[in-house]
Structure formats: C-alpha cells, structure tokens
Length: 269
Image (cartoon, rainbow, N blue to C red):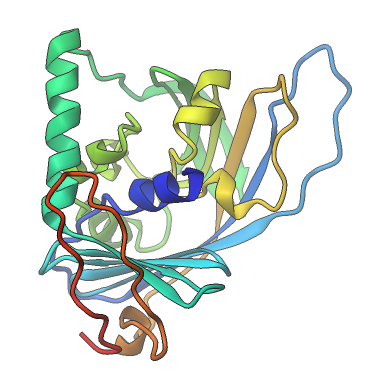
C-alpha cells in the first residue's frame, strides 16, 4: 500500500512542452527530526535522486528500484519497478478521478486557505550559492526552503520546473507549494512531517521516505532534507523516456470500478 501511494504521489505531475533538456541531481537524507533537548545524532547516509526533463516528458529516478516517467502529451504516468521488471501505468482519467474526489472532499469540509511562503530574513551559503530562507507551514508538515535568486541560469531552470501543471499535484493531496510560488531556485528543502502524516502522506516531495533504506524510529517526527548537487542542460537521449524491453505490466484491480485492464506494454512509445 505504501509503495502504491508513493507511485501515485510521484505520478501526479503533468509536464507542459518545454524545449531545452534539463537534469537536476539531488542529495536526500531522511531521519527522525531532532529535538532541542536531545544530543545530535550521526548524519544518515544520503541518497541521490535525479530529475530529467526533455520536451514534454519528465523522468524521476528516486531510487535504483523505481523510475517514474510523465508524458505531457498523453497525460499518462508510467512507473517502472526495476526489481520486478514491471511497469504500472496511471492514466490521466484516473488521475482526474482522484483529483475530483479530493475536490469533493474539500468542498464538504469547507474552503481551506492555502499557506504562503514567508521570508525569514535569514541568509546562508548553500553549496556555494547565496540563498534566502523561506518557511511554509502546511496542514501536516513544516517546510524550510533555501532559495538562490542568483543561481546560474536560474530563471530558465525555474521556468522549466514551473511547467509542471500544479493542479495535478493536488491528486497526491500534499498541499505543497509549486514552483510558481518561489522567487528563485530552491537549492535546499527541509520538511518535517507530523506523526499522522508519516502514515497517510509517505511522499510530500520528490524525495520520499521510500528512497531511504531505513525507517524513522517510532515516536519521532520525520525530517526530509534535499539539496541540489548539480544542474545541467546537456542533451538527454529519447531512450531515457521509453519502457525497457522485457518489462511486463501486471493486471491490477480497477479502484474506480471500470473493470478494465491496461493495454499491453510496448518497449517503445
């Protein structure tokens, strides 16, 4: 169930057409959030995550075990489970059904006021870049962003990230800000989940708990920190966005009651 939700949470983006290729590599750690009265603990091992954008497609490698590919033309999301050599498709119709269901649920609860990014006035150098600190208080998490307004080619990079269609993010019900909210490129993000959120929201950022080899200790809040390690606009091969040969598509239950089975997998689009 947790892996299925992570797949859905990652699979709620839709990329609009952009021309330049873009690759961003993040270093991510997941650990119990520290408390003032507790002694500092050893830093956990970091995991790498890579985001690649080419034209109207996006690929996220959150771990060696899973890749998510988004097709902006069709609206389809493809999850590749490398250990099982399996592929799971999420159609745009199913994403819309999830989003509509959440909208109806929100309307029953009443309109919610979206939190806003708040500047703290603090500045810090992160990986050699001057950054300005912002905070964001979500309904079940607290986030801190270190934004670099003068990151090289930052405006172009941010424009590509802004091409992610924000309403599809709502299908994961994460309540996160999208890239349209930022005055510059966020080079570091730190998110602290509430205890309840650790079970109901295992993925509130591209760097999820799933990419960490361990689990936070019981009774602690979970802290996720992601830092941009490299950005480049080198050409990306089209093969990065196709299904590898030999991957099979399992028959999955249709949670929306249509009783249909996804079409057979083809190694090429």
